[in-house]
Image (cartoon, rainbow, N blue to C red; front, top):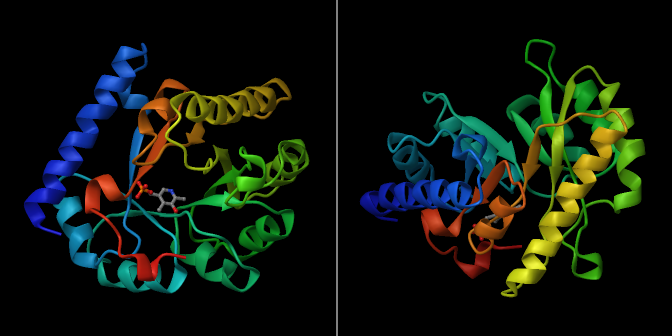
Amino acid sequence: MNMNDIATNIAKIRSQIDTYASNCGRNPAHIQLLAVSKTKPAEDIRTAYAAGQTAFGENYLQEALSKIGQLQDLPLEWHFIGGIQSNKTRALAENFDWVHTLASEKHARRLNDQRPDSQPALNVCIQINVSGEASKGGIEPEEIMPLAQAITEMPNLNLRGLMAIPAPTDDIDEQHQAFARLAKMQQAMQQAGIDTDTLSMGMSDDMQAAIEQGSTMVRIGTAIFGKRSASVET
Ligand SMILES: *Cc1c(COP(=O)(O)O)cnc(C)c1O
């Protein structure tokens, strides 16, 4: 995508975050922008960095590792937001700062064991299925507490909060309901003694509802880097 377009889009998204947050009485500084760069070339990430963006989300491990390698000269923060497979946990533990899609104790243990001692604890979010059958992964709400408890005992993982990918819908009320469910689950965790600071929710098409329901990290791809070609989506 054109360099100027990426910079313009980032400025626009940042200004929307400011507006949506202020309109509902939230401090915009409490909402981080994660730029989702999956399927986009390393050059686009360089352009976004030049526009002030430092946190990037990737879904596909091999593609991500290639870009992380090409961009080692930049102080970027890498977030894994794709599905986790056991044979990929080592590369995740060694190369990422955050994993948003943790959904099993087995994967948590592997990430904890494989995180190099030289690196700070890996930031993790538990992915929750907030949309029932239409889900794109995540655990059921009743499974949160056992997994959260287990993670808090793992020294190389830092449980930051919850993440969800609700079923896409144009219905604003439905968007709100799904995000409200996630926010409520975080409050329930807090009441049970597990304090976290992150709600990873909101994408290009439902960012406003997510912010109004308490999102602290919106994951924005299309609205920054443009449409992705269908062939590389999984
Ligand atoms: C692709 C993706 C995004 C970004 O989606 P857009 O609609 O392009 O903003 C956010 N989160 C996850 C988990 C994704 O896979």
